[in-house]
Image (cartoon, rainbow, N blue to C red; front, side):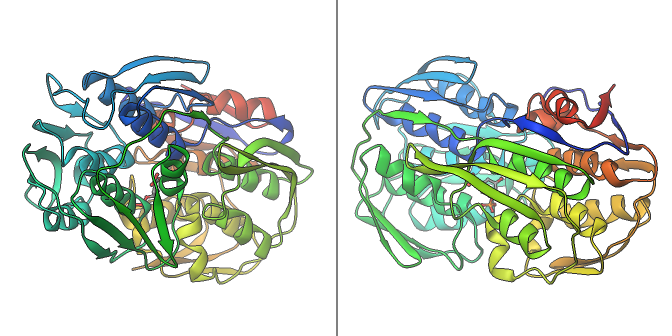
Length: 438
Ligand code: S3P
């Protein structure tokens, strides 16, 4: 969104990561805190809000729909809720930038409103599959038009009388699950969503925190339409997806010892810890506590010798955003790492299997991308130039790779790091990474 597509990171090798740092707030929870706060009765006070482009796109969308929002000011945001039926028609299209979560969750939330609205995004978001939300929303009675191929812009028509559905997700997706639960709040009767594997459950937790009753029966989550939300206080934990780069960086850089403070360790998000531990990483959880319905801990990581593994498929949805970083760990591990069951990686902000494979090959690593995963032979990372293709997580992953490379790594197209991790270069440099940007 910032338009500096030419931003380049240059990272020099040989350093280690040390000290105590706090990464920014959780992106998934930040989005949802504004969405639910806007629809609630009363004022929701948020702290730890992620001031990244993605969550700010959600915040701006609600401002454009008439919601008064104060902040963000050092992570503090006050959302003056307008109630379930208080949103107003925006004067133009809602531009959601790079943010898939904003578009997929808002398509559900807005399907049952009394006004027309169009959702747009940048080139990456405009290429991402939306049929996965449009199909079940159409079954609920929503009237939404996409571009050919089921992509944005999404033109949502008012006046749809939504009906609850009992839907089984064809893929493990928290965005689709959340979209349907949000639409379900405006639907007649009950909406139930069954997932093929557990995915992040922040929507369910936060709905309950706002006093909306939901029921779980195993893999099925249900709610009834017509309820209301009550404003509350939300402390957003530090984002484990942002911590992931440092967990990998400190694991691969000899002599590292780093503590990441106040990180969310929701069981549906800790696949990265499980996978790195299976590879031999030295990761300890300290000071475990709970804030605002979400478990949190300080995470201590020390460098360790990593070994290649066959990543258990049940961990894939629990680490879905962390694979670019995990691939760097695999490149530095001894032996072969095999990932299967991860075809969803091909439809993220970039095709993360292909873009990571290209970059790792450029750096001299033997990799074989497959339809639903990758095979990586651990080796020695060489110096080189890689392209992140505007994917924030790929840019930050290759930045960490430099810790173990034979020479500097230059990473192109890094401006979108701001979508999820504003201040990344400063924080990483403070922990010891030899990173500069131009
Ligand atoms: C998210 C769900 C995941 C994840 C994304 C955030 C969410 O997407 O990749 O970064 O906040 O619900 P999918 O539902 O497409 O797996």
